[in-house]
Length: 483
Image (cartoon, rainbow, N blue to C red; front, side):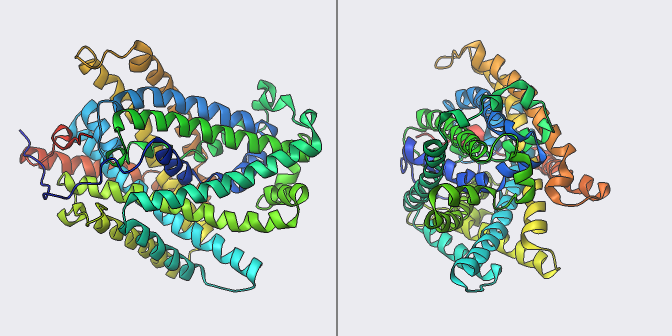
């Protein structure tokens, strides 16, 4: 039998710190609605299936709701900052769960590297454009990183309130542009063909769906912050569904408004001519130059908020894995504000350190470092979501007859099985189009990069087997945290 995991008295997170709405704001901020709309949606127009972008977002939203049906059913019985690690351990065994947990730790910390680079690069460019001040991207990243650590030190509450303000700014400007287009062009400008199957299957629908899925990354963080939420067995499911629906509506309406402004027949050419500035040009045209300037500043806020939210996710995985005895013990320490501040510092050091080392090797911070790290992280997170579906099915089969369970067959089997098929399809799309995400055309290079998460998982499994044979592999049930 595995020994109890080491946990120093008092090193717990702050229970009941945030409610449903705050948790929704936290995870939606991670998705960066303004940033994703400005950068990913034009790629769907240009490289995917053009005017079907709104339907791509609806398709992915429905898929993730089906995933969330089983995911949240399990969440009503399990609360742990380890999230995917814990779910997979309880459903498929602690060895496999530990391997998956190492993948999660690697993926979320690589996501932080991407956001270090993206946040610094976009902000540096906008500072120079708007203020005429040239600040190196790496210096901007250091400043932003220091601010994030200050928020992290004082716990989740203050940081979440700040993210709520950031998200309000993002959604306000997106809504302003959408409403301006609707007011000037009228409802008739919004083409119904954007939601037709003929349009959906035109061009490259696989790429359209692939880029749409990337915009939702972060929604699964509701479970990561479960220990710090009020009544997590109810808060996490509610927040998950609200976040997915909200993100889907925002992306779909923004894409549809952009099509209404430019025209369904012209949207592909417009995105090809100016992918990076497409949505900004619509904002200026319909709302004026002042909103155009605000758009850029809110884009800085969007990237900063996404980095801050992802930092919280990665830090809590480091904390949870340390608490389970799978990473060095100091990472589980919390400060007087119940913040896992040691893990926060380590995550920030990793993000900045990896970024700067790779930049010293003359790699471009955004198009190379950021692109590579985000692509690898996305593969890891998507693979984990795919595996969680299997874990949910098995966990429910083992426990659904017990008192307090009794979930219906749609929750325990039908929805997870459909999600498995959909997740497998989207994961295949991501891997088959991996060169577009990394920026490398070399097949051997992409095979190596695409297989890194598998290598991490194999190493994690070997570590798990070794610890299990010594009786040192923690059972997630023993570290489950009651609200």
